[in-house]
Image: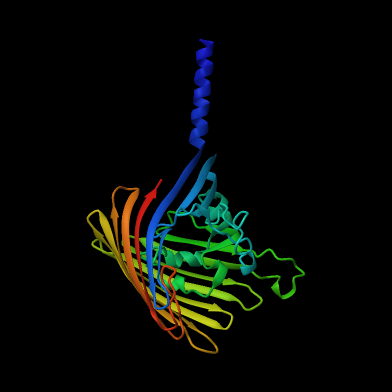
Length: 355
């Protein structure tokens, strides 16, 4: 009888522990046959991340009681066509832009996200390497999710550098849910330079914010950021919106950026159209850099794609895109090479599996 009671107590304690904390392994493997055509050289390659970025991650949450929780998130990007890991950035500066393990930088790094956080009814405080608020304003309102040959040109030609997508050494705050549709976040990040580094002591230090509203068919958000560099502040801002009509979702965004003496501006308009077990994706986007001296490069892209879902986790997809360059721009698709002011086209054919 005593042994039975002890066994029952141990089982109950184990059940309570498992209910209070959890760890999840997750990931995406996305293989892409990518074809790029340029005026100088073409390229065909088996690559990755044509629909969703390939990744391997671990995340977990512990219930601390009283509505509070502690969480971690470690997510690594990798190239499944070769098995290589992807580079990260340690200080939000070009000088810290390529550590990825040893021996030529092929090691696995948690470059996509590596954070620990505390959350409660008051929101969430998140520490580590994370996506910047200014990035979310582009990805959420791009039908291609800024991935693959169809990704918006407002990111493909952006002039804002290391913090345009993620920032290391960051402290972030996210608003709690259930605020009547309002959401938002603020983030401060550091370059971690020595105080006696002179003009570069503040390089890589900056902050950003994002505020949005999502209710019913409407989602709208605005974001802005500023990052310090000796060569001049880098500023990034955008506003985006989407409306779900049921038969289709229309979305778009406008961006305004600045890097030293160069101003950048861009826009996108596109949509998602459900079609049976799949979805049609289409977009037109443009980015232009206004330079103080010389030509003002501009690239405009059209993109059309289709995703066919074989299941909730597995999909086949294809995308076609074409860019037109002006003002000396040389942007080419899928690693092809094109001359200044020439066009380039690209195709993605792929298989994506998530777990």
